[in-house]
Image (cartoon, one colour):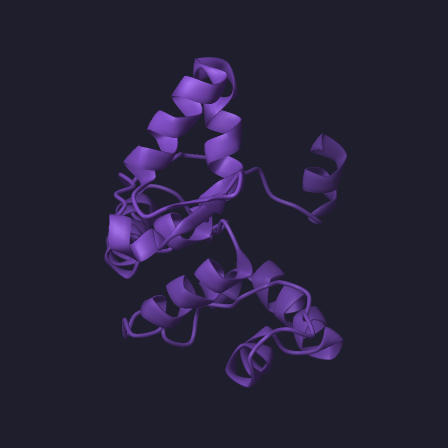
Length: 164
């Protein structure tokens, strides 16, 4: 790591975890089909599993069945994430020289966060999504993800400290 920093290929990373509370709406999650039964409420599903398996397997089973992307990617929550990201970035850029990176739970969430960030005038032409294309991406997302040539140009841009 130190050698790549000395060569200028990478920079030291300052990681600061930021948490936004996750809330879930029973209706947002929809019906849960599990073990031949339909659960209309998450609480009913959890109670069923407590009775059947006890506490030890409950977390794993819940994670497998409930679509966490739906909960984590809730529009109101993502608005809070973007607000925190912008605030945190603005506070840190006064103290440290460099750029910022956001790592998302999924491609869909990364795209949603990107869409919200570019609504902010300060970030409009400074934000990039760096990920490989996927044949299931929407046309709009494909245009933003770009092709290999685009990504190589963005990597060069990212290394250029004059573009901060």
